[in-house]
Amino acid sequence: MEQIPSFNALIQQSIIDNWDLDALTDYKGTTLQYHDVARKIEKLHIMFENSGVKKGDKIALCGRNSASWAAAFLATLTYGAIAVPILHEFTADQIHNIVNHSEAKLLFVGDVVATVIDATKMPNLEGIIYIPDYSLVVSRTDKLTYAREHLNEIFGKKFPKYFRQQHVQYYIEQSPDELALINYTSGTTGFSKGVMIPYRALWSNFDFACHVLGDTIHREDRTISILPMAHMYGMAFEFLFEFLRGVHVYYLTRVPTPTIVAQAFADIKPIIVISVPLIIEKIIKKKVFPKIQNNRMRLLLNMPVVSKKVNEKICKQVANAFGGRFYEVIIGGAAFNQEVESFLHRIGFPYTVGYGATECAPILAYADWKTFVPGSCGRAVVHMQLRIDSPDPENVPGEILAKGLNVMLGYYKNEEATKETLDEEGWYHTGDLGTMDAEGNLFIRGRIKNMLLGANGQNIYPEEIEDKLNSMAMVNESVVIQKGEKLIGLVHPDYDEARSMGFSTDDLNNIMAQNLRTLNEQLPAYCKLSNIELREEEFEKTPKRSIKRFLYT
Image (cartoon, rainbow, N blue to C red; front, side, top):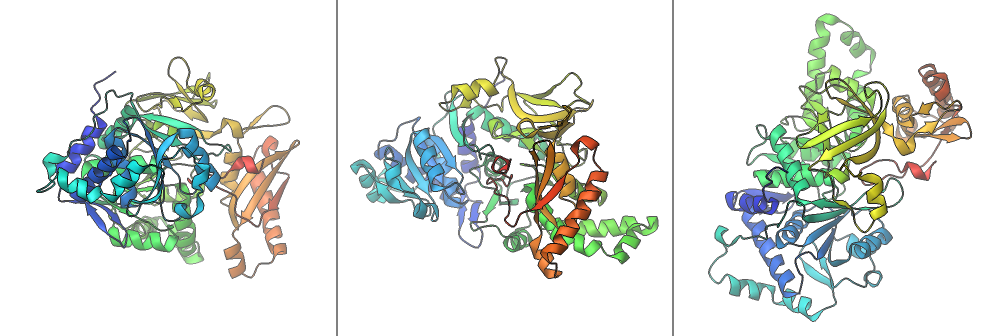
C-alpha cells in the first residue's frame, strides 16, 4: 500500500496554518475562525478526557448542519474516538437503534432532535450533549457532570496565559486502516447498515478532491454546505476537503427551501456547487424552462445564426442562479433527469455528474466538466479501480465492482452483509448495474434489486422508464412497478402547476393518458406501461432524496 499521510495530522496542520481565517459560518448567524474551532475542539477534548471517554469509544452526532456540529465531529476524530454521524431526518426509533447498535457512549443532538428522542430507549449512553452550546441534556455519570460544570475552569488551568497554535496537538491514527467513523446508510432498502470508514478512505477522498479541484479552489474561497454532513457526500466534499484547504464553509442551518437556497447563492457566490439532482432539476424546471419554452424563444433557438448567442445568454442566467462565480456544479447521489441534463449540455453549462457510495466514503467515478461525457458519471477516480461484471462491459450491463483505498472495512457487527458485499479479492460489489465504454466512462443502468423481469425473461430497468416519464407534462415524480406481468407507472403530478392552470382530476387523467401513449411509442414492446396511476402524496424519500422504492413495489 502506498504511503498514506495521517488525516488527523492534516486537520491539525490546517488549523495551525489558517489560524486567523474564517472557517465555518451558520448562514445569517455566527462565524467561527479556525482558532475558534480549535478552542471548541480543545474544550471538548477536556470534557471527553475528564468524563472517562477512551480512545476508540463511539461518539454519535445527530443534528442539522451547523458550525458547532462540524467542531464536535472534528473534536471526536482528533481525540481518537470513533464518530457516528446520524442523519437528523431519521425517525426517533431509527436514531435509538443506531445509537444502541453502534454502542455510542455520548450523543450530540441538535435543537429539533433533542425534542423527539427518548433517552430511556438508549440505556447505555453516558450523556446527551446539546450541539448549539455543548450543554448537557442528560448526564448519567458524576464525572461527565463535573467535567461540563468545571470546563472553563479546567481549560483556564491548562492554558493560564493564552491558547495558541503551538497548543494544537491531536491524536494521530496508528494505521491508515484504523476505524475513523461508522456511517449508517440512508436505507433505500428499508434498513440501515453501519459502514465502517477507515482513515485511509477519508484521506483518499480528500486527495482525489485535491487532484481535481486543487488548482481551482484556494484559501479564503467560499462554499455552501447544503447536503447533510452526516451523509458521506456532504461530509467529504462540502466540509472536510474545504476545511483542510482553508476554505470558508457556510451552513444553511434551517431547512433549505428553494427561496433560502437562491438567496444564499446570491449572497455567498460559492466557488463550487455540490448538489443532488433533485435541487438542480427543480431550479431548472421551475425557474428556467418556463422562460424558454414559449414560441418566440423556440423560434430563436431554431435559428442557427442567433441560437448560439441565445444559449450563451440562457447559460449565464442559469449560472447566476447559483451565484455566478463557481467553477462547476457537481451532481451526484441519484440518477439525473436526461431532459435536464441534455438542456445543460446544450447551453454549455459547467456541470458534471459523479458516482459514489457510502461504502467508498463516497467517491468512485468523476470527470471534470470539460471532459465529462453526457449521460455518464465520469471515470474511475485516483486510488480506485472500477470494472463491470459482464462478458461485454460496453454493451451488456453488469454489476459495477470497485477496489482501492476508498473501500470500507465492512459493516459494523454484520459479517454476513460484509461477505455479501466485499469479496475475497477486495472488490466491493455496488449492487448497481452499469456499462463502461472503451475510454472508461461509466454509465449507470439501474439497481440490481430494482431490475424487473419481462414476460419472456427480458431485463427491464425501471429507472430508464421513469427518466422518460419524469420529463412529460405535469409529472413531478414517478415509480414504475410490476403487477403480475403488467408494468404500472405510479405518478405524483405537479399539483401546484395543475392548480395554477385550473386543471381538474379528469384533466390530469387525460394528460396522463396522452403521456402513456407518447411514452409507449418510445419503449420496446416488453417494457411498455399498461397504465399510469395518480398518487396525491409525494413518494417517501431517504435523506439524500432517493425514493424509498421498496415501499411501493
